[in-house]
Length: 337
Image (tube, rainbow, N blue to C red):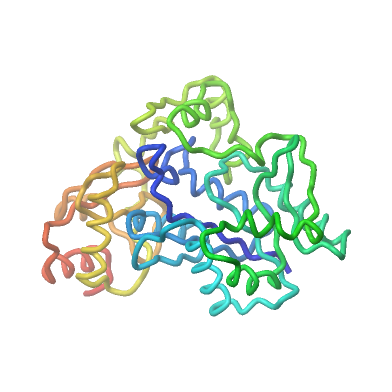
């Protein structure tokens, strides 16, 4: 059975200055790229752990096929985020001690899915090992593939020490996979690193795009992708300029009527997100699903803002969100008659 993937995504991105998993790279966000890599590696179950300040990423993660644990409050460090994710996995997916899980901080945008495949093959070929990590040069990287049997010992590991320290304590059970590419040790922390990733002609993520649209690779290589370090990145999109002509609709994932509390919480998260700064909720301009609405029908009731990257919009909501507002929102998306 493929391993379970755990993505601790509750950080504050302080060095980047804004939520880095929402950064646009090509036609998708950084989070979508990483989740796409996991799918191509054959991972069937992925959990993304989010904190309230990045709650707006929940719909992106779910749309990409991941389960989401939205924490009620921010965690003090990554270890705490990981442990809450492990608890959720234990409760909901009940892995056995011989099962494996993949720990992947989601800020590794150029990760090759072959790394994940090779880690599994490496453990299969070395029965004494229960941990596998990729290495480039003399530096360990990500992701780490770990037997579930380690989880209980991780929980008991002394407070104040990260899980890297735990892995170093178990060198006798760890096997290192030498990897030729620096992608396994390359993460994304600063605006300068983001700018380097977007450098025209770099083409780093062409292979990481699910079902690439015609001409995308050529546009990337030619440097036609317009980008701004503190703005948006995207390919010119006729549907964005004239949404009514595209045949697509605004999609809000889910089918049950949304409560005042849920809409209000999402709106506050968007307002405090420095990439959006609008009191509203995220929708996507895509092929229709059960909870979809014509662009014009939504625009007749609410103000719509183009935000984040290609296909992402924010519907501005009044503050405070009232039951009347919630009813109007649910009605336009067909969730109530």
